[in-house]
Each structure stands twice: as structure tokens, then as C-alpha cells.
Length: 417
Image: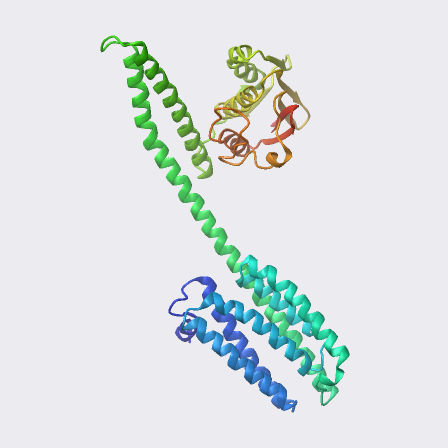
């Protein structure tokens, strides 16, 4: 039985999950029409209902053959949807109008559309469905004689019950199909992300080794041990070293991001003085800040604030945020403030720079996303790595910014005491 079922749903050119699910849906539609025809015969319903079920069965069988044996899956899916819509319009009148139960099947068909059709066809389907329902409702009111009457009230109720059960079955199956598609896409996305992280980590290691060698030999040449150099050659070596260091920094950023995404980055917890770490990190930028004519303002408590965390990763976060503030602030000041409450330590790094538009703020922490407001900017990895490191350490990183007035990055660190 299992082999027969696999043979029925697996076509010669339909090897994907979506195609197998669609073939299954066609088989279920055929079974529904077959048993509906038997029910109509047993209830002594008009012969027109039985002929309708027979015709529907033949049409669905043709669609099944087209999908299962000919491999015309995409065209068959579109035909299946609109043919079902046409058959439902006919069934509306053959089943005594059924204003109460027919919309359930229309809704079920709409859910099927979400499982099989692309976005363009979905957008086309819903206006067609609404116009179809309005049209058949209007025709029923204008020409009530077109509606085939029921032979008895019992037959009417039984048909209502059958229609409702079919509608619920269609919606349940459609939701299951949608869930299967969603799970499949999630698995593919997770696998692709994992492969990407592995590739980035592997290539970063392979690139970093020769880069270090090139930078090292450039420094050796600059010492002129192998002989004197002309001024032009010295300029070339300086440029080579600068570009090599920039590329090495980019490779290191890619390696850090790949480690975080693949869960390979280790966190080494130890106790540190948060005030001292902020002061030491800010001191690294003092010369650069003064060279640009900026002011560095520290607002730090006088007392010690002990924190159990990874000092290296926290320092990396601070260097990225302060470096970004310096880079995007042509004039004014950079402010670094540390405050605390009963539950958190709060670090705010504020600048009077160019600011960030609201539409960019939602994407600023995405990898490789660049606003393009600074000359010679990096690859758009600094803030992405900073955000990922904050999540890794259990911090909350947020941004407030206004174009032309500056930005404020806020780090909230939970207190352990």
C-alpha cells in the first residue's frame, strides 16, 4: 500500500516536496468528488448533481495526469485553482444556493492558493474570488429559478453537513501543507547560513596567513636591509602596507562574524572594572579625536563598578562604537557616559555627527549594510559584529538618531549583584 501511494504521488518530473504535495491534493479532490457522487446517489438527489460530480472527477483526473505523468506542475496548479473556482460556482446553484456553507469551501480554496501559487498569482486570485462570489450571489437573487431545489429538508441538512466537513478538511490540509513548506524553507535557510559561516571562516583563515606574510615582508623592505629605496618605492610600500592592513582588518571582521553565526566564538568570563575599561578604551582614540578637532567628553562615576564578563569582547564592542562615532562626526564632540540602576549598567556613546535616517536605523545592524555617508568606509561589518557580540554576551544594544544632529548608541548590561 505504501509503495502504491508513493507511485501515485511521485511523477517522472515531480521530485520536489511541493509537487508531491500537489499531486496528493489532486488525489484527495478526486476522492472527494467520487464519494460526493455516491452520497448524492444514495440521497436520491437530482441526476444533475451526480453528473456534476462525475465531470469534476474527470477534470481533476486530467489535471492529475498532467502533473503526475507529464510534469506540467506549474501550469496545472494554476488550472487547478481556477477550475476549482469555476466548479464551485456551478455547485453553488446545483446545491440549492447554500449561502451558508459554500463560502467555507471558497475560503479553503484560498488557503490552497497560498500553499501552491507564487505571489503574483495570489494577488490576481483574490480579486477574482471576490468578484466570483459577488457575481454568483447576484445571479441567485436575480434568477432564483436557476437554483436546483432540494427534494427534502433532510437532504438539505445532510448536504450542508457534507459541505462543511469538506471545507474544514480542505482548510486543515491546506494549513498542514503551508506548515510543511514553511519548515522546508526554514531548514534550507538554516543549512545555507551554516554553510556560509563555514565557508567564510575557512576562507578567512586561508586569506589571513598570506596577508600577514605580505605585510611582514613589506615592513622588512621598508627597513632597507636589502638595499636603499627610492622615494617612489617607499611610497609604494607604504600604500601596500596600508591596503594590506585594511584587507587584514576586513578578513578578521569576516572571521569574527562567521564564528558568532556558527556558534564557535568562546566567551571567557572574568571580573573587570567597567569604569577603568571605558577610560582605557577612550584613551586609545584621544589622538585621533584631537587630530580631527573634536572633543572627547567622559561622564564616568568615580567609584569602581565590577562586572563579570568577557573583557576582550566588551572592549571590541566599545572600540567599534567609539570608532564609528569618530568616523561619522566631522565637528563637535563625542560623549561617553556610564550610569547604573538596580538592574542594569547603561553605557551611552553619543556624537554630534551626521545622524542616521529612520529608514536606515532598522537595517544598520545587518551584515554588509552601508549607508554610504563616509568616505572610505568599511565593508559594513562593524555594527553587525557589535550587535552580534552584544547578543552573545547578553547585552541589549539600541540606537537613537536624528539626521544632522547625531546618534546615540545605548548598551544595557544586566547586573549580576
